Picture 1: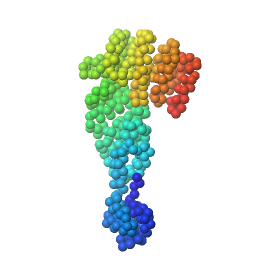
Picture 2: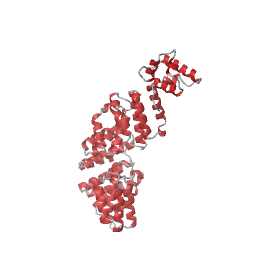
Picture 3: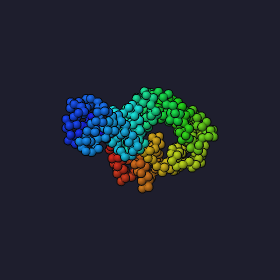
Picture 4: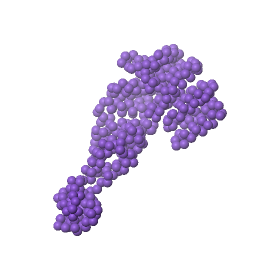
Length: 421
């Protein structure tokens, strides 16, 4: 997919047919002028291009020099390559994308430059082929897209947020927020998603008041039930993390009064009211919401039950009911975890693993296997250094000696390529 000027194409074709400059230029232009054209010192006009094509075809006795192809400018060639690639994204590797990017982007118009990079960058993220390399395409075009009020701007922002948040680069997401004029994003739904993702970044950096404001603004813009549910849950959870438990309690109670809310929102509200009850030592609140949660959790899909069993486990642990605590922490583990889950859910899963190790009095083979399987399912970049040390210490203390050393060695080895340990 090499891009050549019309003059370079003439030169390549002439040399491949062993035609001399004198033979080709005779009666059309001077030899020095042909040399200037072939070396991009003089632009090839359409009239001269047509005459040179006819001469090449006459000498070679083949219709090999196509005027339409020869006369295509670098800009047109670059645009054609871009359009072919966009139509066939699945046929290219990340290395192909990078090579093509650097070969064509200097010839693309600003509009096409933004289009090409935003589509390829989004494709790399969405297919999980190469999440980090998606930044090579997305980051350089942000300023141009903002300045030109380009239609791809919302997509670029949204995908950059997702990459930063996936990599826990919350500060980058916050910097992005501070550099943007949100008034340039007109579509309500996508603006809501973008505000939610910025809220998540402030949330993770413990700026709970700012996060709540962004979540509330996002809530007013999004229409999809799952998006609304995520906003509602995160607003209340920010109140909990900010230790404003009574505000959180009022918020979740008001949420439960809304008849339009789904069973999932109700389950989340019951879960969070249990957590508020634990923090405020309100036994009645904990008991009432344990009962409500146990009744309601079976009404939602398995993939939405994350955190519910962990919260029930914490609630029972508050009353020192070890047996029911273990049952619920085990249910949380049985739900499983994978790389696609949110950081929030994975954090709760890790908590359940650690609590089970603490609570198990006797480690049977089944229990050892359950813990091991759970730990090795967790994405390695999800562990904090503190959690890694805590798990190793607990395994060393709790597991039978014949299992602890083998497990700890395997656990440490799994972090060889990670910065966590």
